[in-house]
Image (cartoon, rainbow, N blue to C red):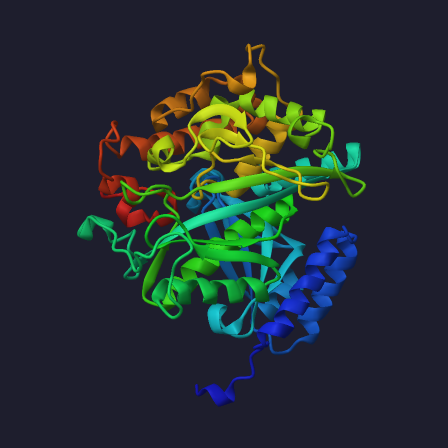
Length: 476
C-alpha cells in the first residue's frame, strides 16, 4: 500500500507537546478516573486516524512490554483484555497463566509518528489478577496503591526526578551481540559537556530531547557525561508513578532513536571498565498541600526533621533494599568510589561517595538524592523501596548513623543474601513476590562468574534482563 492511500494520525511536535502537557496537568491535578476514562474513550472513538493503541506494562524485573491493540477492538473491549502471564518472567506459572490488563487512562501519551509510527497512541496498563485484584508482581500497581494511600491518609504527594545516564555505542543491538564482539565501541570521545554539533552523540541527544519534549517531559538540560560516549538528558520532576513511567519512556525513546541511527543506547551500569559508569540518581521529596515537607530554612543543610528522618530510615535499610536499587551483576562494578560512584552508607551534602546526598535547594527544590541506584533497575521498585523505607521503615540505633563506616555490597551475591534475610523486604513485597524476585536475580547471577574480576564478562551482558531473550537464556 502506498503512503498516499493511508490516512493515519501524524501530529507536529509543537502540537504534540501541548496535547501531552494538557494530559499531564490532568494527571497532576488528580482529575477523577471516570472523567478521564470518558474523555479518552471518546477521543479514541472520534479520532478516525488512530489505528492502534500501544499498551505498556513492566514485569517484575522492570523489563518493558508492549502490546498493540487495534483501536476499534480496544474501544469496545478495554475492560476485558487478557494475556498469558506465564510468558512473562516473574509473573504466573504456566498452570495459572491468565491475567488481565486494565487501562490507566491518566497515563496516556501522544507519540511522535516518525519515531513510534503513525496512527498510534501509548497507554500504561495495570496488571489485574484472575479475581479482579491488582496483581502482586506488578510493582507499578503496588507503587500506585502506596502513593494513593499516602495522599488519602496524610495528604502527601510523593515527588521524584531522575538523572538517567546512558552510553551510546556503535552498531545496532550491541548488547545482544556482545558475545560475538566482546567489546563496546564509543561513537564519541569528547568527554564531559563536550560534543561538537552534528557528531553522532550530539545528534542522538538532540533528537531524543526533541521526542521527550514532544511527549511532555518538560526538559531541563542535556549534555555528554564524564565518560566517553556517555549522555544524560534531564527533565522535570513529577508525581512518583508518573516519574517512574517517564523512566521507562526515557529508555524506550533513547533506544528507539539510537536504533534508527544504527547505534545502541545502553543502560548497563558499568559496560566499560576504567571509566565512569551509568547511574540513575533519584531525587525525592514529599509535598503536602503544595508545600515541600523537606524544606526548613533553619534545619541542618536546610532540610527539615522529617527529611532527616526519611534519610535515617533509608540508611537503616540500605543493605536490605540494595538488590532492588542495583539489580544486576554488572551494577556492582559501578559502586566504586574511584569513579564518583557511591558505596558508603552515609549522607552528605558534598561527598559523592555517599549513598545519599543533600543537594543545595530552596523551598521549591529541597530534596534528598539517593545516588546508589542503577539505571537497569525496575523503576517502580526503586521508587517504592525508597519511599516506603523512608516513610515507614525503622531507624537503627547505630552511633553516628549518618556517617558510620558502613558499605554497600560489592557483589550481587551479598546483595541477594541481604535481601533474602531481611524482614523488611518481606514487608515490602510479601513473601511470594520477594521469593520470585530473589530467584530471578539468583538465576542471572549463577550464569556469571562469581567474582567480578577486572573486565566485563559476556554473561553480565547477555543474561542482563533488559536484553533477555529465550534463545540466549537457553544457551546456558
